[in-house]
Length: 183
View 1: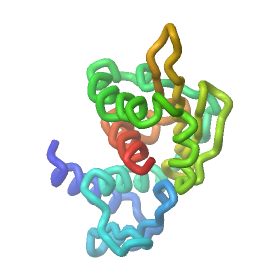
View 2 (view 1 turned 60 degrees about the horizontal axis):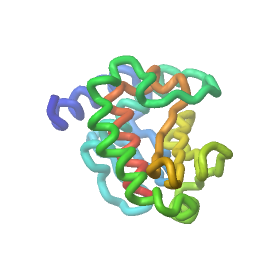
View 3 (view 1 turned 90 degrees about the horizontal axis):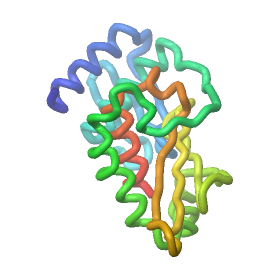
């Protein structure tokens, strides 16, 4: 499905659920105004329209939110534990995991400074780990292990067990990629 088709379908699905014509929504630390009448998603901080991939995520999330976001399970799962993730893993690894390792594998502590603008919370897993809230009720755990004599540097991203009730696998890849692009 093309971005244009996905966005059109996203607006149609949101319109079926929406009771208002405008909504405000936080993505990471930025606020967006979703205008159903004009089919526009605008960042409050930059007054710029959201890109296609982010628009799709926002439309999917807001539709789900209006239908009821599931309660957090407080159990982390990896991408590989998502249904149907096997075929998507090479893309996820390339777009997300490998980028984290390239950025922070040698110096995991640098991720802490890089994430200050995302209101990240430090966690106690791995050499360095942080939790960012991508959307309300959608925490994402990013872990980095530095290289040693036996192992190369590695990284991973984990999601609350309920993630697949909010986003499809493709959306999870895009959301993860978006988060990493902001670090």
